[in-house]
Length: 346
Image (tube, rainbow, N blue to C red; front, side):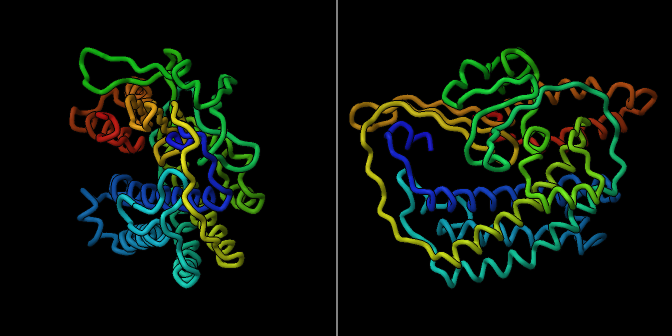
């Protein structure tokens, strides 16, 4: 998207929907693996995901089933499950055929129940209650529960275009860490599933909102451990969305389109919602189209100050605990954020 912005080209609605399907697949894969393999062991008494295979085999199988669905979505749409290759600036180099889409659709329909049961499972746990006030920031749109396109909004009523990210997102260096710390004009913020949910829940489908009400899910989540619930909620939503997009492509069929050529070379910026939060990319191209400057701000960088802030907010819960218990609760908090170490060291 950022390269296309730099080249002054706009892909078709069909290609945007294919990308939305790809991104839904990524959301499902990331959320499912985080929930089942990193979070669940904390709440069922398993020492790790390896032990989970033996002690809670059905839960482990559900993680594998959801990951399989996500892999099939990405592989079918973009030719490869890991580092897909068909989706490029200007469109797609290859388009999936209807028979392959039907096969993925069958898998996706079967996965809806698993995703719903996953949500119900993660609503049953007794999460540590952490009192805090925080700013939430995410893409927002009047058209949908935003994740592919939109403007950036936050709970302090800022609203701005991704191209203006440097006026709002400040990356700061701290003396005790090599990773940059991202803030909203110097203020701690949180990005990711909980931020998206708090800012955009009203754009979820009515039928989905009705199920949320039946499950007694609040429209405003604030405990950092609620990020787990928000991810489980999104995991279910993105399985449904993937189903709807697959069904649409099967009914309407996919039109083969040629890649769009650059109209000019300049600078471009874009943002989307990665599983862990808003991801910014900026590129500047020279007159021959070579990249001469690049800037990426990842979700984990933006969440690092909030993670530190919430470690301090854990203090009342940590009083009287042993060193081992304190370490474990802090680790649980960090796992709830689902940080990406690679992203923090870009």
